[in-house]
Image (cartoon, rainbow, N blue to C red; front, side, top):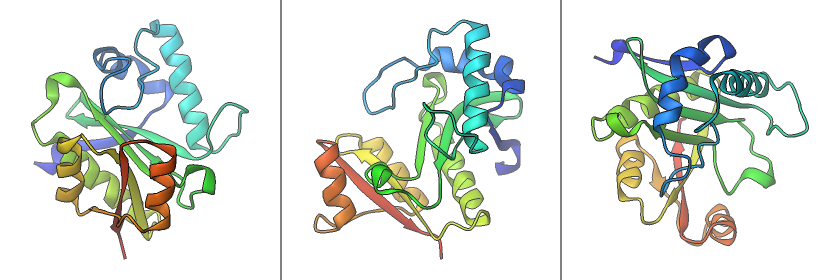
Length: 181
C-alpha cells in the first residue's frame, strides 16, 4: 500500500495538480499553520509554488526562510496533504518550531494518511543525513500527538532547554523528538 503513495517536492510544474487541495485546506484552522495559499488565484498560486521551490533550493530571497522543502503527499495522482522539512541544523531562531510540519486535506483526514506521509518524510530525512527530527505540536491537538507517537516521536521533558524555548515562544505548545540514529 505504501508504494501507492509518494512525497513530491512542491514546484511550479505541479501547481495545477495541487491547487484544489490548497484551496480546500482552510486559511486558518485550529492546530494548523496558516495556509497562505488559500484564496490565491491559480496564477498567484503558481508563483507561490515557484517561491517555495526557490526556498527548497536555498536560493535566498529576503522574505524566505532558508532550506525548507515543501512536499505534497500523493495517493496515485491525487494530492492528499502537504509536509515540510526544515534544514538539518536549526539556527537558534527556529529551534522552537522544529524540522517537520504537515497538514492533510480535510476530506482525507482520519484515514492514516498523516502517518504514511510522516513515515515517508522521516525516511527521506534519514537518507539526507538527519540524526534527529524535532516537531512542535499544540498541547490540545491530541490527534497530532498520537500521530507523532505512532511514528516514534516522544515529547521532550519540561526541563529540556528546547522545550523551555518552545514554551517561551508558543503558549500551549510542546516539542517532540525522534532520534534517527
